[in-house]
Length: 487
Image 1 (cartoon, rainbow, N blue to C red):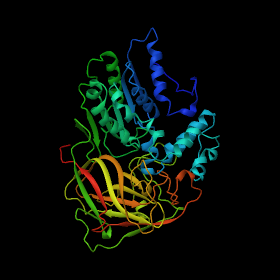
Image 2 (cartoon, rainbow, N blue to C red):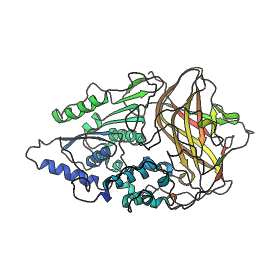
Image 3 (tube, helix red, strand yellow):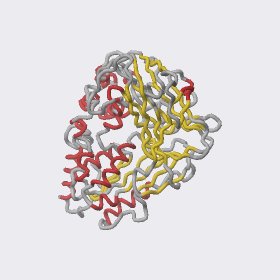
Image 4 (cartoon, rainbow, N blue to C red):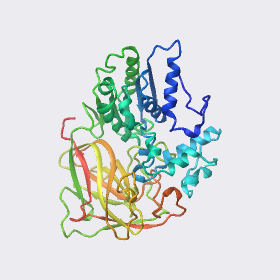
């Protein structure tokens, strides 16, 4: 076993200011060093999770022939652009808190116990000062680049998948914020990796866990863990010992845990075949397969009060203090006036959802920008509501994440596509499907300041009134990937 300090950390030379941007060359240099050693037999594998998974992807994208296997767990592939600034909204656990924790630890300072002064600091660009730190160059560059641009693309492993020759054992969790990267990289590796063994022998395993690989007490049964530690070890050791053979010949390409059914499903590919099924928002809080009538009642309002954002309750995050990821009871949140609820009637038969969940909302605001959050929930027969997955959409990013859309005009109705992440979940007969629609989910996301400008530079926060439309001309809807196969 060989351990490496990343450039500028521990006993490695260089500057830690360039973490996240130097790892490709850092990994290549490290592998070159191994090759130069008399005791090295020519084959290396890498293991690690989160940031240490990112360093594996970066080393792999160098195409170094000595690297024969990687094990990225709950790992980003694009420098955390997907998890830190999803749909243009800032997720502070990775974008703010992680940077500040690393900066303080390098100075021998303890982690903050109260993040409020940091997260409330304006402008956000100088939040490093509120964390008791000197200027943090990488943090300031990252927070100043909400659009997907060259800054992010230089870190993006997706751009070099064709150079990756090492098979990957990809593992993640339904409540890990880095899940989109895990799923996306599996798809890309199977299609475009630069060696046949990388395309054929890459595996995917998704458990009902969060970023810290815990179930947080979810009621998933005693067999919800897949023995992943032993599988990872076998995958890596077999790549070293018998590189000409499939390292896991008894394992399927895809193995995912289906929550609700509480069992694993094996498959040959991801995504699984599914039927996109729309459930339309209707008056009276209904969620229906039937489209709205032409004379459906007008829009519903959400008052966005910056002094009282909707608190996060369950979901996914990277260990932000005071935030518990996973499934959580939603009933208190659902009593708030700024949380709109839309529910189906009790299901007559089970409905299984496997794949990417999304929503289409038609909305407006009296501010130049707007955020809309959507949370999918499972409502049990006794009325208990549990979150399944969710997401956010920002109006200024409605035309994609590489350009900023024009500011909203007062009363202008725009379409927003809300990516609610992937899941594998069975809604049982007698349960109801529900979505929450709101304007905030704090501290999972920082509230939109509603100024219309770049969030990192905003020096004030304004209140706003948003509206959700659901009529024949503006058919707001939830779109579920319904799986019809056997589980």
